[in-house]
Image (cartoon, rainbow, N blue to C red; front, side, top):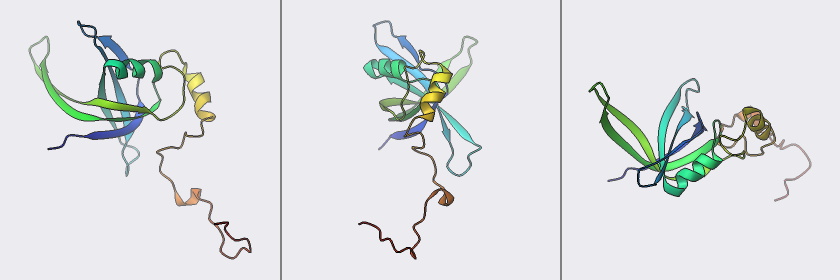
Length: 147
């Protein structure tokens, strides 16, 4: 049996870092992931990260940052204060990769993030490429391709 999830998306908010009663760090955040064939539809996936990785995510990720998450899907149930049973699905991350540059999560302002994205050579990583965006080589040109 296999339970592996790999997601690439942007954070909808800064990671929320908490500590358990025994001092273990746990961070939660939500990834917004556009659907491949319908860009108007977005999935919002909750992510849970533990221990040192949780602290790194809280320190270096922030709202709008592009991240790749690898982990397992976990479905759990809980009971509200009113006694209603709820079910939640979330990804428990084993690995989180920061895919764009930026300042620290909560310390950076949206203006700083926007200017950092403007200068970021990796901004288009993960975006769909359209045919009209590609420079075509004209076969009738006398210059040969140097390889």
